[in-house]
Amino acid sequence: MTKPNNNRLLSIDALRGFDMFFIAGGATIFLAMQGITGLPWVDAILPQFRHVPWHGFVFWDLIMPLFLFITGVSMSFSLNKGIELGLSKTVLYKKVAIRMLILIGLGILIKNTATPIFDPSQIRFVSVLGRIGFASFIGALLYLNYSARGQVYWITGILLSYYAILFLVPVPGYGAGNLSFEGNIVGWIDRALLPGRLLNGTYDELGLLTQFPALCITVFGCLAGKILQESKNGNEKALTLLALGAGIAAIGVVWGLHFPINKKLWTSSFIMLTSGLSFMLMAAFYWLIDVKGYQKWAFFFKVIGLNSLTVYFLYHFIKFGPISHKLFGGIYAPLPEQWYSVFQALGAWGIIWYLLYVLYKNRLFVKI
Image (spheres, rainbow, N blue to C red):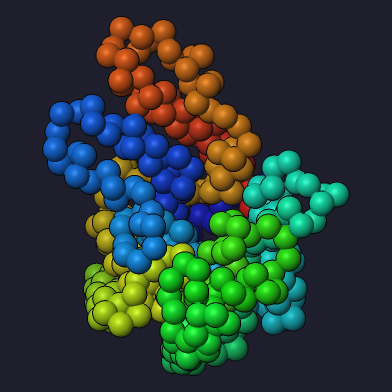
């Protein structure tokens, strides 16, 4: 348990909380409204909360990349603080390495409940937390050893190399440049080298090769954090983030005309699009909350964002739906039955938020 830094930007915690709200079941509230509101525009936006099967992009595909981006933003602040405190690079390397190993271990625990420890072939070794840990570690190495321009060169090199690998390296039985579910080289490498269970049997979107384009989002986040720490005025920093985001997203869209935007493959176009959108969201939250001072609306998300690891574990280990029904079912019982799932989901998130609020009031924040 740690106490928060009073000098931290509220917008970072709020944006993290906004993201975690959806990661930890917030989308369930919206999906439960399918076909029951009588409002065509509601039904029209609900597909935005379901991943596309393969190529394509919806809002829901942004949620995981956005967290990787926010991780980079936050990490740039913590690394700079460590440098200001006189910590050597070796000490900082050790800290991020230990954090990576802990996140990998916790990720295996979450993705394998109950973990089949006596049958390693059934253990899924890759996870969301593991991806965050690896991206943080490599991102920290690049941030501590390269200038902003050098980090951009690394991003460019990784994304172009990934582009070349997927199009030029042949897969046995399918050839080169096959981006189908069955024939892509990402899945072939996982089947050949990744031990344990793959999420989709023959493929895992959190597997080995996709770690490298994904970490570029965290490096982009580090660059955004560096901009936020500059001595320029807030409006100028927000405009810089917005302009960069628009440019990066545009590159992703254009690139996607040849290298399809695909979350499961973490294609280079997908990385650019989601990084650009993350820059723009960071700009919007920063300008509204820290520059213009509109902070009251962000409190709900701040409470979540300050304990993101806690809410992630609560959501995965406790079934809040049945608890919500037990506590509030009698209240919404007179309403039409098709609305029960909506109010149960709302109640579940109300319980989660209240638990986080208790931690917030007692200034208890779980960090790694």
